[in-house]
Image (cartoon, rainbow, N blue to C red; front, side, top):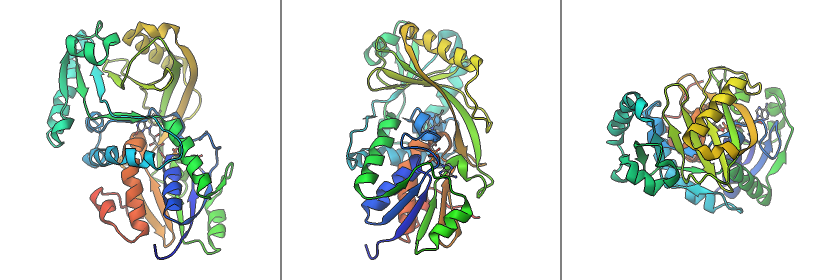
Length: 359
Ligand SMILES: Cc1cc2nc3c(=O)[nH]c(=O)nc-3n(C[C@H](O)[C@H](O)[C@H](O)COP(=O)(O)OP(=O)(O)OC[C@H]3O[C@@H](n4cnc5c(N)ncnc54)[C@H](O)[C@@H]3O)c2cc1C
């Protein structure tokens, strides 16, 4: 490295922590300012299900997200390996399940996934499964479902362990961290007058004032403790009224969610959403009846108008990274590597993933 750069990272959710860790690891001097706290309160990253599901997402997203997801699935183990604390990472596939009466609706999605998967490597091809195969993959679900789809290369990680481990790494690498520090553009510019080389704006929905296209897409999730339920991998229930995902985390914790509402509203979850999520979870596995509700959370996913991530450079020293939307964990390593390339004057990855945007 020719010169150690002085960097400010504005926002320490998913992207801000990953970037701070990588910059500091590369020998740069890093200061971080976040409006929230070390736990990540206020970030989408704290409440996310953190599923890493490029093929499942391909049904509703643009192809660059799938490509970034494929790239990132290969990069996560390496990134996690570089952290000072363990982070649960799993790549044993995910399941799409539906009840017999919902098979006609499920078919069109399943057909789409088979078509999309033709552009992916052989080991990513979806597998139609019967009750017997489900018995092997998820024995506790096999009594209820006659068919499903297994997406064998998909994964997930533990978002909170990741945020903690990144924070520990930042502390060990001497990153200056300022919590409850909600700075505006003028204040950041004043700070960056004193010899700062780069400011990285990673504020997610908090960046709307400087990037008007940023919008929030509300999500609601419930965290349950259900030690009686033994589901091993993320499961999506394809239901016409109550679609649902369940991501099993370590120590009997399950993150369940479904909702995606075009709204900047981050007020608490409605009774209706909570009832629907819990009923759908119970319909999937009756063991959830005795689960304990740990948290009911809402948060807004930071999205841009095309629902793809974007990087732009409004001034010589400022880089804005945003629009990670519902795929933040899925694409973060790809976006991170593209930003680190940009710092070194290399645009190959940013171009490959179509990340660069005009101001
Ligand atoms: C319900 C839900 C479920 C999700 N599930 C998944 C999933 O299964 N898989 C997946 O890949 N992704 C998922 N996501 C998406 C993922 O969480 C986001 O894409 C990702 O967290 C965005 O990262 P970010 O760093 O851009 O923003 P955030 O993680 O939101 O971080 C932004 C940070 O900026 C700080 N900030 C804001 N304003 C200021 C300011 N003025 N000054 C200083 N700091 C500021 C905030 O405090 C916060 O810490 C989910 C999101 C939600 C809400």
